[in-house]
Amino acid sequence: MTSAKVELGRHLFYDRALSGNGTYSCASCHRQALAFTDGRTRALGSTGEIHPRSAMSLANVAYSVTLTWADPTLNRLEDQMLTPMFNLEPVELGLAGQEAALLERIESSTGYPPMFAAAFPENSDPVTLLNLRRAIASFERTLVSGSAPYDRLVYRGDSGALSESALRGMRLFFSDRLNCSRCHGGFTFSGPVAFEELEPIAPTFHNTGLYNLGGTGRYPEDNTGLFGFTRKEEDMGRFRAPTLRNVELTAPYMHDGSIATLSEVLTHYASGGRTLAEGPEAGVGRENPHKSDLIRGFDLDESQQSDLIEFLKSLTDRSFVTDPRFSDPGSTATLHQP
Image 1: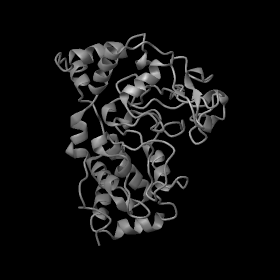
Image 2 (image 1 turned 45 degrees about the horizontal axis):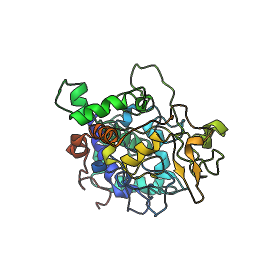
Image 3 (image 1 turned 90 degrees about the horizontal axis):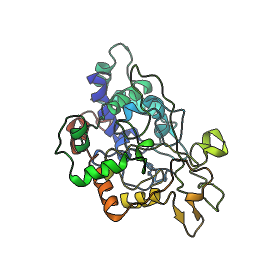
């Protein structure tokens, strides 16, 4: 991590020339104003292909034990990046087979060669795909969100940071009755974290009873969660808990964007699972045999739901989504330059 790497990574993160057809960048699916999500139900690739899952927030991604909805093997940003860059099913950035052309464009641009040289002075030939990935990962590791009203209360002792409603909601969130923090725990509100000198913690994945196709426990074929990697029946429908930081800005919700509002999310959990009455995905989620024991359901009246939503809004870090350090730097080093 150096300032030069971060600045290079920031330019690359926003550069649409890092897609096969020149129309998409990392920021196309990770918009700062939306806490580095995209506001779509499911992510859309550079060629128009729909991804089976929604784009996860990059807030505090440096601390994530694992980096995707359901792949336990991806725990380094430099490695995870290979999927959106080169994936074919679906195409995301669409760079497969264009590696040499991409490096040639970088080397022939006016802005990037000196930035790569500054970022990787130990390399005689610094313009490589590995260094490109290292630079973008360095920028992503600076995307730290920690100045929400909740943080001002808990970490800075500002007793007036939260409204009375949000304070009541906070007590509900951490209560044994609702148990929200069992899955959305820690300072990231996303479960296990990783950082220097911390003993490794295994990633966790949860089945929340979002689906129960035909009463069999199945999830839609393109979204089977951890089961897609382990092929173990008990892992069907298990996904990582996303961060709740800035959750007010990251709708729609769940791994496939199938719940539109925070109110509907709370209804889902209060019911102990979602019921879909008709269609190919019909089923009673609370009866899913693979559902987590933590998803028990609870009673929540209208006033309590409002309080809980107010608490969730207190996790919104307005400075994070407007911080100029994380914004589009413009075209000063873009590959579009001659």
